[in-house]
Length: 246
Image (cartoon, rainbow, N blue to C red; front, side, top):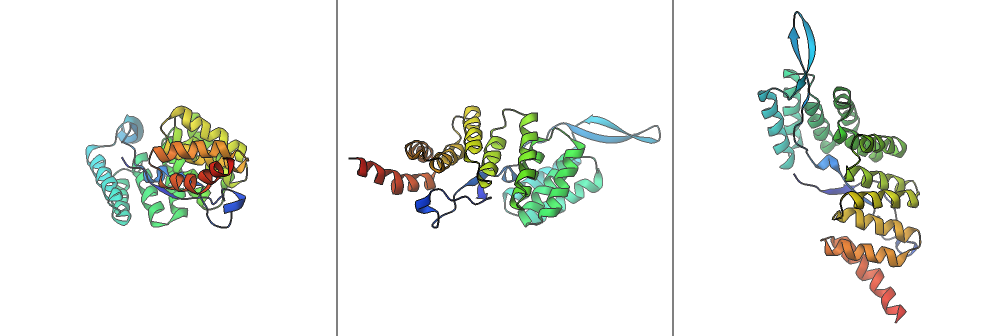
């Protein structure tokens, strides 16, 4: 599985750089396809459809797998066709609607993606990835409160879901609540001590709260983990601060 960063809400880092850059970003779970899980399917029993627990049929699983591969290759239009094919075979497979939503989200069909994620959640109320992705779409549409509610739900279902803490922190930051953002970034790091994006964003929150030294510490850690942006910020801001302090 792969994880990528894409722009979400914009939040300037500091007064000195406010007009120069927008830096708060999300680890979009919309860019991460999770493995298939046991979900509800339906079969005809005694003349009526009955829900049964279990994975989708092998044929649907294979279609969804192919759709996931196409998304990873940057072919969301083709993945969308696979998702629709899977849904035609069985309209009660949550993973198929998740794939549909992912494809729509990558294409830019945000309203359609919202509907697809909502259907996936209807079929599987504990589908944390669908809550997280739906929250991301809501946030990209400016509905930060709605996004936070979805991240809340994802965390309720899985308290070890570090991405949801990070995403919720970004949404709080976009609303100007740096303190709440900081708390969520702390939680993301507690769950995953090697979460580069959480250190990077925590540094931003600390900078917004006036803790420049704390921000520099986090950016140095994120840079050591491979963040090019954090390395740049540390070089531009933190080294200057160290020079001034001499």
